Length: 196
Image 1 (cartoon, helix red, strand yellow):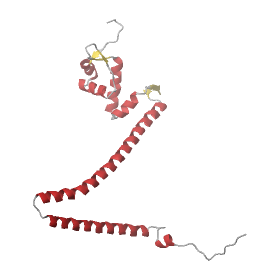
Image 2 (image 1 turned 180 degrees about the horizontal axis):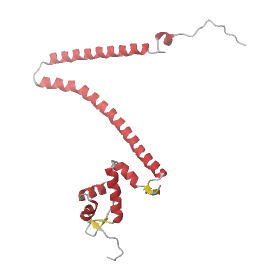
Image 3 (image 1 turned 90 degrees about the horizontal axis):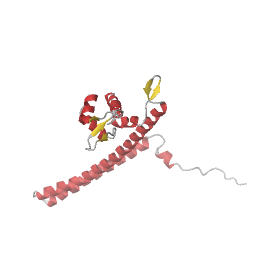
Image 4 (image 1 turned 180 degrees about the vertical axis):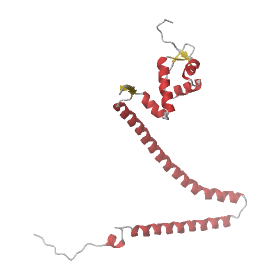
């Protein structure tokens, strides 16, 4: 190795230099935040740039930034701003836009999952009485008695649904601008119809 070649550290030495565990370095590598070189024997080797990158990651993590946010930050270089190394306004806007886009995608995913969960709960509620009937039949209960219970339960549920529907309709007619008189008012026909 020439004298000018940068010193390469093993994962153990790099972790010791950064005061973290080797597993921490491997974790950030698995997340795609750092890509060390590999020796012929496939051992990880870290140079000064890798250590600086790890230093940025560890500082940002200590400040509570998420790994997704850090990933976006690492895509943009720091610049000299007001005598310190900071992100430019343009870089901050790019990071902001990227994170906002991720949040929008997650919100859409959450909404989809809510709809799917609601649908699954509905199907479960429909299947539960069927399972209950079959288990009670297998336990030896009388089929006619169980079927009568199901009919009664269904009639009760239908009545409750009708009551709920009627209550909602009543509430709707009490809202401003939805009174029956306004909805059924016919146009006046007593006016003159002049044609030229």
